[in-house]
Amino acid sequence: MAYWLIKSEPETWSWDDQVKKKVEHWDGVRNFTARANLQAMKKGDLSFFYHSGGERQIVGIVSVAKESYPDPTDETGRFVMVDFKTERPLKTPVTLKQTKDEPRLAGTELVRLSRLSVQKVEPAAWKLICKMGGVKP
Image (cartoon, rainbow, N blue to C red; front, side, top):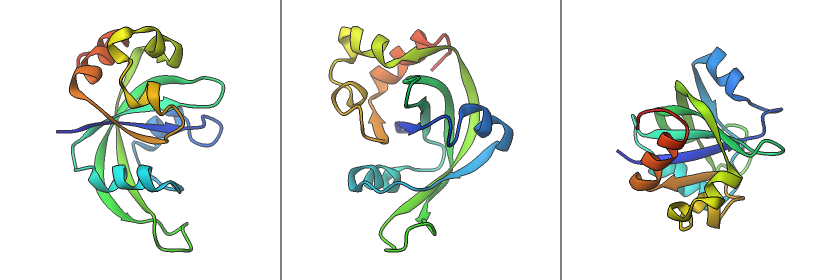
């Protein structure tokens, strides 16, 4: 199993939207590194759901329900999307500031590449963030 983090502006697609829909596609990614991460995802992998913009916090966990397939919103045909299934909310959201203040997370993509919309999360960081958020890994 691999671990990931996906970001969304809550005004565009929020955790509440994801919870209501239960399974939804993740489209609109137009960054090649983020695309490569989407293509590397396997069914069952887990991902943190991160509210970007003014909130900047991890609010929940989703799983990959369907592996990458062509994104019909991409006119060039170069980008893909993945379907995510709602798993559970974090009991306590974990903010970007908290991750930056935690020395054990200094090497994570969330801290180093904070603008990347789809990121890999190492297992040790996954466990620590889950603990910070009050949920079991």
